[in-house]
Image (tube, rainbow, N blue to C red; front, top):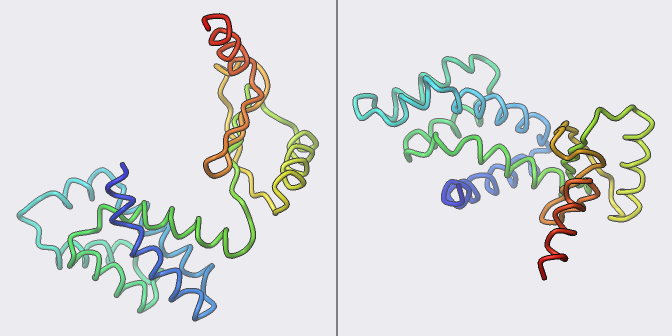
Length: 178
């Protein structure tokens, strides 16, 4: 959904600048993640598209669900998004904010997909190798996909390192067809 990310980017950048200026990156991270989960809920999504529910009422509803977990700035941000008809991009705002935060902290986010569950030693070794390669701290999120057959697939930003059996078989098939 490129359009949603395009709409969300200026909001995420503005919130990031505000959070960094106030030394409140972790607080904003938590507030945005909470608001994003609520905005992504199926019943809230149905209300976002409903012309019978005013933007102000929708923002107040979201704030009511968040309760006291948002500070005044967080509450104002949610109301701003509601008034501008942008509550549906809250998940993208949160995701983009997290990317800006990790870049600022010198951390790269890595999505590691493995064919089988990795033990702690294997994961630690893989992350250490990635940190050497990218010369930055790596924050890994691991998932399991048995369709890889064996090995791992690592996604860091736009770069994909595919060391899976499935990936190698696909590369071999392409080479044989050429």
